[in-house]
Image 1: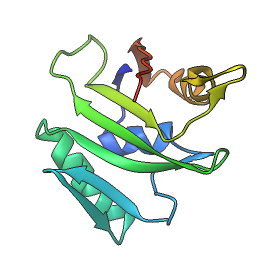
Image 2: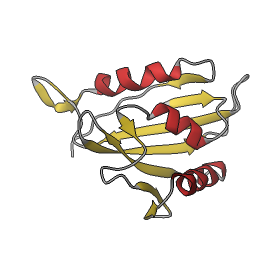
Image 3: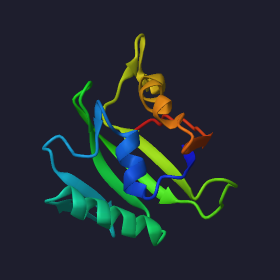
Length: 142
């Protein structure tokens, strides 16, 4: 997804988007970020948020390990800063959501049911502070 936002920080945006049955903590209730080819674990939400914001502001690709309570699955959430700005919005992000085993389409279990994720996430992006520019769903053979 490409999203523009007026939320102050990348963490504020992610924390809003992945609330309720999605969490920015992994299944073990730890805050984890992947950058510089290493997984980093943080003891506090503040330390996690500050590192996420700093890395994204510097233009570095960052992934966090999240958790979906409904499916009891971990998922990877990538966030990249996009340099192109939109009038009326201060931030522009590319968000990648990579489900674990994921919700599958009944009768076609090989394919991910992206509507499961989109119907939970997109309503959170209807506030005047956020605007969805693009949604792309891809399913690959492993």
